[in-house]
Image (cartoon, rainbow, N blue to C red; front, top):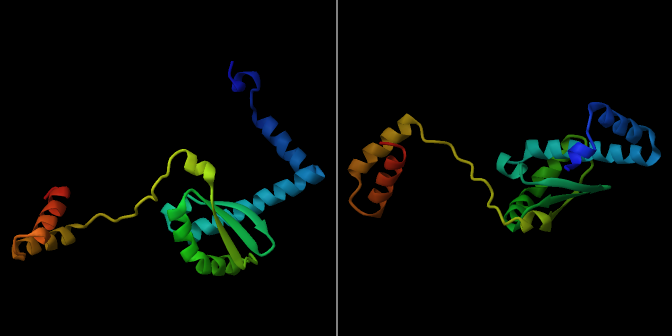
Length: 156
């Protein structure tokens, strides 16, 4: 028997849980922390490139220090390069963050290392025409072969 069958969820149960969190002293602190971390996550998502923003998770805020988890070393290196700009953006948004600590989340790495998603923009018609013109002007060799592969890839 599945858990959903033995413990059916309802919207009312969710409301009761949030109500308890909001009115219980420890739950209230937990709910406030969760809202704070989600707000920080949203500011970070607006600051970072989309491919990187999808892979990070705000883990903890301790005073003026923010801990961010990433799935691997490549993400960590990229994020560490951006920490001064990120801290500045957070400060502009009203968060008193002075230091950002980047940690690798071992749990994310267990499922296999994933490469960061590559962001690209497809070539437009004008760019493809320019490559076609260039292909007629380039001497045979590696560059001509690369241009031919690019045009073939784009169906030309």
